[in-house]
Image 1 (tube, helix red, strand yellow):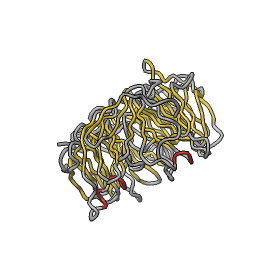
Image 2 (image 1 turned 120 degrees about the vertical axis):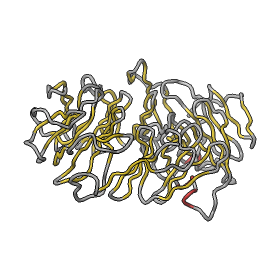
Image 3 (image 1 turned 30 degrees about the vertical axis):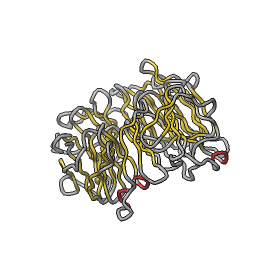
Image 4 (image 1 turned 180 degrees about the vertical axis):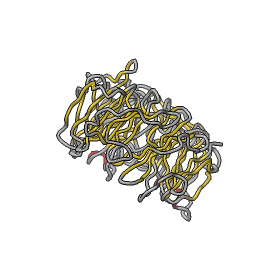
Length: 429
């Protein structure tokens, strides 16, 4: 980061200094993290989980028709109050539409696609690539209400399907060819890559990731590469993207904003060196320093940015602020102090929201330092490991606990638990 700290500050309780709006941190500030920050996925906004939730519904190998060998039940897509579930069956996967409210099947029977896949597009149309499944190989459309399949069009060796607006991104079995097609099967564009590729689409941004470590942002209309990088991570946010460069000695982050619903990649809104993103599912990126220049820092320094704006929203530093343990989550960020207590701020404007005590040494499963953000509502931040789900009240740090054996994720604002051969949705309060 370059520039100079703004002299405008505010003090909150413990004396933490927050600089607002036009702050740019000095390059040699922050914390050295030894583990590469993974790309952020989703913005982590949850419905109300202010108290320990009950299970709304569960599906498992006993309730999903034709469940096969494997443990992975996933949500392949959502549409209004319906979820498209995927689970192991036969040679590959089966897909079943269920109610997001009750978990009851909407379709009488699942679609067994074999080695192919299904996805929902933005119009609520289900597209399925059938390969060695229960029907002849081909690309089918499934009725949203019944799961009845249309007449097939050419499969084009498709195995991966991603919904993109009214259309579908289709990737072949080798992963080298990516095609955008209409539901009718008509090709819009096709391009090839040098290595096996996967794709993700969110908030109007299409990203192709190769097995060789290359990430490419594609123009959804033409398939042209708008920007690409290697040894990098691309994180998506509601207002743009952050491209984190991970090459040792050349670390940095480039930001690109979404303008009128379209990602502008002509030039970065801001480019920073010797910094990295702090891991977490959040509405805005949180940055900190990286590299040898930061080793001698005696306190934490963090900066919060909007990818669509050239200036930082705010920054924070204080003699009592730890260099480690920052946890962006939903619309908030929790910072650790040197005494291991915590303070929480709103990401959008740096407003102080609360503080909490140091973690209980006898309860390591509730230590935020060791947990991953699932998401946050305005009142509660939810974190988890493979043993326990924790809801921390933002105002005072008190929390609820729920034992689990598996993983937790946020889907459409709901908390979803994956535990062995079952998937459970937790009811908001």
